[in-house]
Length: 319
Image (cartoon, rainbow, N blue to C red; front, side, top):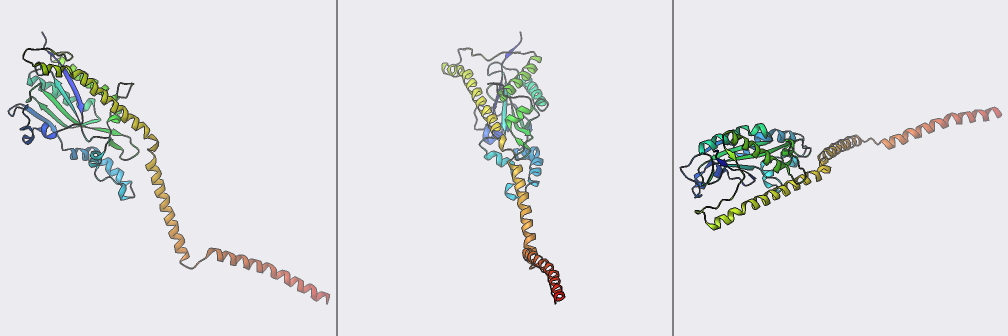
């Protein structure tokens, strides 16, 4: 009979690189971690290095177009960290089984390593900056994947930016009613993990709560709340995603502001150049209006002179 296991996929913004890397200054204070347990770091990249790799060229191109220093972006990572709408990094945790029923650590290791290996192929807009396998905690082996969402084609700011909803959209996950882009993506990821688990001979089942004598009643009461809390969490994720998409749509009329500002700067530059030309011309003591009046007066004087000579000749003939 095939072993039955559950699969859970959780996505969030609370990321602890020190925990994931097993920094002992941090993990020694976490009693649920076995100091002699098995863990592996498959990928780890400092976030600042990652942002330079992912957005460095776009930042350089943007700054080259700016004529004013105060509009240049010196540190894109710091800009995102100060934002109330974006997060510098996101994390997905993939767990195979639960505390009672899960694959052997080496089996989980091989399956989750394959998930990590195929991540870039399936989700190219979610750039991995960290991948950590943990089998040293009380519970089922699991994988942390930390990623930065990459979106393209922005007209305001950098051409390439950190944008979760737009990144999902570029990969084909678009809001459909209450089915948010993020929910669609998580469902797709879970489906791929399920397939890999099944190929290993396991039967994937939905989580259920089984009462066991050695588990306290209080624990069961909390465990029974998990599905409802998970649904509530997904709904909140959906609300956030829909709000982000609505904000993205609302900002469309303002995406050409930067272009208009550049045109204004060009016009101001031409205006200043013209002012300089006129000032230089006037500094030589030339007054165009006076010179014009002088020429007109001279023309009028020349027209009167021949007429006067003709009148004088007529008077002489009459005499």
